[in-house]
Image 1 (cartoon, rainbow, N blue to C red):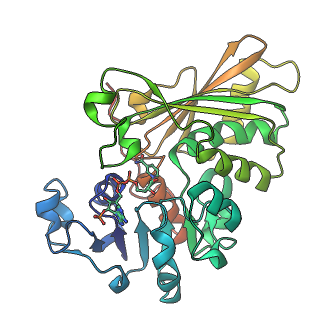
Image 2 (cartoon, rainbow, N blue to C red; image 1 turned 180 degrees about the horizontal axis):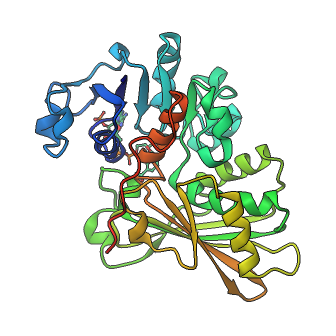
Length: 337
Ligand SMILES: NC(=O)c1ccc[n+]([C@@H]2O[C@H](COP(=O)([O-])OP(=O)(O)OC[C@H]3O[C@@H](n4cnc5c(N)ncnc54)[C@H](OP(=O)(O)O)[C@@H]3O)[C@@H](O)[C@H]2O)c1
């Protein structure tokens, strides 16, 4: 049994982490850090998390003592604590964006603040296990990807690897409102979001530099990239409709076969004729499907932003960091309808 700490425990991803970890046979949550709910018992904050009900929330992140720490906080928070965690031998999975970009100048441009721990940016491994699993196994700091980049990159990387695409890529993405976090905003607040579909993030969503950086790290040369996210009246889940430009004559069945071969050894990516969001909700699975559309196939990628797009992918990364099978504690079925 290894020990785990969750920072940002009262947020959406913190809560989902604790829920996922409730099923984990080899990770015990011994520490939960919360600014807002410090001093309270976890059982009072979230009565559904019975396994950890007696863990008392602490406001002091510097006192964390565990084999692994999950950081589920807004941008700018992880970089304040990661150096001391690593120094004390704590492995880290950061669910926020602080370690996803390699270049501190780009981080400052995208997130509007200087990076306070630029020294660890090159060490951090991008936590997409289906692509960087070998590197994650020997890492001590993992930058868990954003939810949109997970869905988009799982669809695009095999196509770039096979040189099946070149030129422009268009991603039309939809997300449930839990993607915006627990604090209501003028656009994600229920009365504003419940009866409409809202494009946002223009002109350049923060996830675009993240995705382009990963593709370049893999040796791809991404062409013009159009990414338009929309808020839709769902609580959890993401659908990315992805329109790449085929490098030559292409049909949906060839791309589907390519995906099946690429992900044959990766149980959390499922390839089928269709991809349905309810199958993914509450799970660590991403469902991919390809359809013919005009000259080039279109790819659909769905996942749960709080699951494979966040908390359960973080646990998948923790499994690899701790030398365990990546599926440990993560085989729960989706909600269905
Ligand atoms: N929501 C998603 O679908 C999703 C998916 C992938 C990645 N992410 C990323 O994961 C991180 C957490 O997302 P989330 O949706 O869980 O956000 P959230 O619901 O807003 O929770 C973030 C938590 O961080 C803690 N916190 C610590 N310092 C804070 C500060 N200075 N200001 C505000 N909160 C602070 C708070 O919890 P305590 O009071 O308990 O400390 C807060 O509840 C973010 O970086 C987000 O971009 C989110």
